[in-house]
Structure formats: C-alpha cells, structure tokens
Length: 179
Image (cartoon, rainbow, N blue to C red):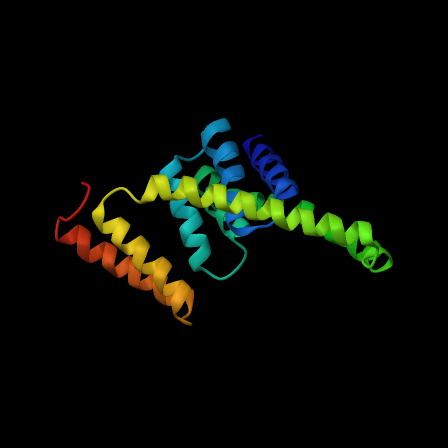
C-alpha cells in the first residue's frame, strides 16, 4: 500500500512540476515534509543538494532518495517511476500537437507568462532555502563568495559546489560557526 502511495504522491509532484530545478523545491517541501512527513526539512534540502550535484534530473534524484528511505530499493524505483510518469504522458501529448500550434501568438504568450511565474517560484525557493542554510557568519561568507563568483567568473558551478563543501568541512572541523 505504501508503494502505491509513493507512486501516487510522486506522480502528483511530477504533474505539478513546472520549471524544474529550484521551482520544484516548495512543492517538495509542502508534499514530503509538511503533508506526508516522510522526510525532515533538513533531509529534503540534503537530497535536493545531492540531486543537483549528481547526473540526471533533480526531481528524479530526489524521488529516488525519498523512495529508498521509505521502502528501500523498490521504493526508490517506484517513487522514480511516479515522478516521471506524468512527464512522459504530457510530453507525448505535447509532442503530438505542439508543432501545429507552437507559432500561435496565444501559445507564445502563455509560455512567456509561465517563464515569468517560474522565475517567481525560483526566487521564493532561494529565499526559503537561504533562511534555512545561511545561519552563521561562515555560511554567509560562503554564500557571498559563491554568488559573486558565479556572477563574475565563467567557471563551472561544480567548482563552487565542491569548494563550498570543502569550506564547510574545514569550517566545521575548526569549530567555527553555528553548532
């Protein structure tokens, strides 16, 4: 029964995920932390962060982590299938008809408005994530350096993720910052 619940919950998440990436974080928090209480807020942030650093789609990676936590390997597979199922169906339908309608002004206007909304969702996620993760001077410094570096330098984001992880290890091993 819980496997079906995993599939349906992640299918619901998959059907509501527009924009991917950071835009889905509020939905994951609401469904998995607040409603189902399957994971803590810290766990979902960790899964999300790991999902960003590993190959593949963040939603799929996060679903796999949560599903595995709930019901082992089979749970990971079922949650993953649940989150991709709506996309496969929707993309198949869109692919069948989009080429006929893609150049219509109303379709272009709708996609432009959706992109604006996704920006708002991403900003909301960044603010929420920032409140939970920038908790002391060392994390604030890492944040400022990472933001400045990504804006000013043409370096792979992976470099910033790895550098931040190393800084976090060093800072915590020295006992600096929030305990």
